[in-house]
Amino acid sequence: MSTAVVARLDSLGDVLITGPAVRAVSAAHDRVVFLAGPRGSAAAELLPGVDRVVRWSAGWVDFDAGPVTAEAVTELIGTLAAERAEALLIFTSFHQSPLPLALIGRMAGVGWIGAICTDYPGRLLDLRHPDPGDVPEPLRALSLAQAAGWQLPSGDEGRLRVKPLPGPAGPLQAALRGGDYVAFHPGAAVPARRPSAAKSAELVYALARAGHHVVVTGTAADRELTSRVSGGAATDLGGRTTLAELGAVFAGARAVVAPNTGPAHLAAAVGAPVVSLFAPVVPAGRWSPYGVPVVLCGDQTAPCRGSRARTCPVAGHPCLDGIAADDVVAAVAQIESRGAA
Image (spheres, rainbow, N blue to C red):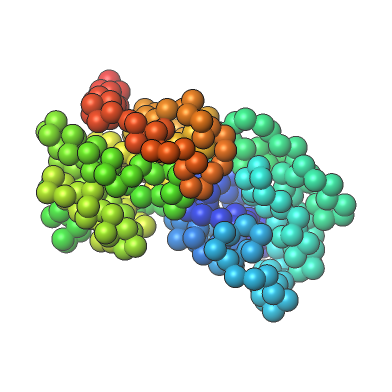
């Protein structure tokens, strides 16, 4: 039985965008193990083609990881060695290095290791794939799998996907009022990538005033935010869904309105059209939701453009807080008309 390990060690959205590449790896192997960080492991569980998820926090990738210790590295070496994998494919963003994990893979006895890498890898990589440049992140990851000789199965269009999800049930189903709704997700792990709570509340109110039933989604940690944003105008689902249930909520929505965050990629993975409140701290051409109808809102020429800032460096957060509520209402109408066409 052939086993491949694929790795993406950062967050939910970063894991979801590897989906097409993972399916290509799965088509060529009997078993796929996904090595994920703590913020991305739940997403890895949802990817078609993944048979097992191993969770490990990498101090050179995860911004809130603890120290890199000999004990933790030794444990990962043992875990990888026990898998007896014939290949390790390391997915990264352009600013990350695959080489620390490649070294660990070598110490675990993995016979073949591939990654996109601009630094000289010595003997750490068998496949040093050049950076494909300014392409959507799912295609960047897929290019690595294809360079290894692994192709998507026939009929697979290469879109983001998740495993079949059960539909909303019980109180969650009741909150959705029969399924005619717009989902609004105000949160993002990186502060610079989300509108202020006041702006999100304004947008939700405008959507409700335009006649939409709006449901506001978020994690348990987002409950204060979702409560403020929903106000009396929308249904507050903050902290009321698992990741799979959130995917089911998005799948039933007429549109999902969200900033550049993992749930926006989850929306794309379930086929939902997305109104993307996109801060230009990273390029929209790479990171906007992939493979579904998208309307981009936000000033893509703002001074923060390309800065990769985690906290907005411009007073007033103009790229997102400057979005007009009427523009978001129009974007939802536009994206709904595309779906009806």
